[in-house]
Image (cartoon, rainbow, N blue to C red; front, top):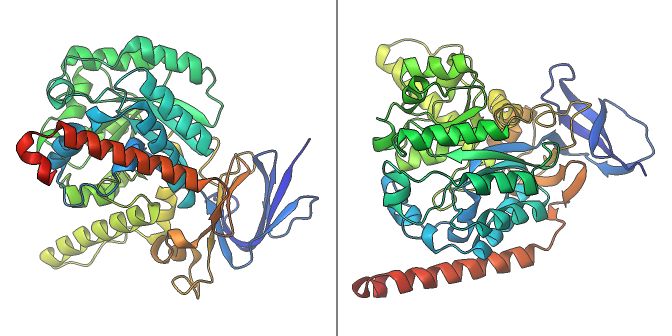
Amino acid sequence: MTTRTLLRNGHVISMDPAIGDLPQGDVLVEDGGIVDVRPEISADAEVLDMTGRIVIPGFVDTHRHTWEAPIRGVAPDATLDDYFVDILDTFAPLYTPEDVYAANLAGALECLNAGITTLVDWSHINNTPDHPDAAIQGLAESGIRAQYAYGSANTSLADYWFESKIAIPADDVRRIRAQHFASDDGLLTMALATRGPGFCVNDVVASEWALARELGIPITVHVAMGRLAGRFGMVKQLHGMGLLGPDTTYVHCCYLSEEEWRMVADSGGTVSVAPQVELQMGHGWPPVMQAIEHGLRPSLSIDVVTTVPGDMFTQIRAAFGAERARVNADCWQANMPVPSTMLTARQMLEIATVNGAHVAGLEDRTGSLTPGKRADIVAIGATALNVAPVHDAAAAVTLCADVSNVDTVLVDGVIHKRDGTLLTDTGRALRLVSEARDRLLAAKEMKAPEGEKATA
């Protein structure tokens, strides 16, 4: 039976150059796909009145460690060095599969509530074979579109992050691929979250890249961030090993050399930037314009809610403000006018939507309101005091709106949020993630040396 939904009379920002912006437009959804976007559509369909709302493609988060939802805000002042010790060496070894399930369910619902319809779940918490199954179950139950990126275990900082000789277990990755991702056409798809050179010995790096390519799944890796990885020359090392390719997303990229930027671009690689984390934790300046200047289409990501907010509005403004601040300062110092290539508010919306879909390898199905793509659609309320009156709809989304203005969210045509309320049992998700928090804190207390327990 065909199901149709008509989003009527919204200010449509399609992010499709052939369609453009429609100050008064309709979007027709049929069986989960977009079939028409025009100023006025007549159809026998369930009507969602979008009057007073800005209708956009859903945001795409191209790198989030979703498993950290139960320890949200636990490291507000952390540097990247602190994070490795306080999170990866302290909390990560304590995680049970139940904790991961609760985290991914609550974390994915957090995304949907904030208008993020596609998520790359960088899941380096596979301490047992049950952990990835639990992570995938949480994503699936939320209804989000997600790329599950299978990562390493995290039971020892020394074993997994200092010239690690332990490869991601190939047999379990093959099991997960066969059991959960036999098709690449579903809401959930698969990637491999690798640590890369410097963090691993070359034999491990080569084996993990080979595994991903054997299974036909993309690769995502952190590079060129902070005091340690900023000096590894990771992309140059990968190039020397003959491993660069269009199937790889490079996360952060704050300290890539000019040579490495060219290597990424020439190989067809993609880039994910996590601006708030990079500024706050010491990774380096978010390299949004550097990526653009090298012909790349950068995307945005949240990274860790242990330390930063989990919404795309924060990332958009962090990237926009940081990049313009950097250029303004350079131009002031040189006593010259700012260039015409300064980032714009409109560009930031493109980076947060269609660029994100490109980086996640899903541009054929999401990222713009294009007939033939799946219906991942968000409506932003434009009549609230922090948004109205609207002069520039794209700027209203990128520079004025926040999570409270996310009115309606559809993924694959299914309505997940309506009139500002998630249509799911959020109470259960909150209970489970709170129970996971309590269990993890108790386990941390038990693990702490006697002298530290009173202050743990």
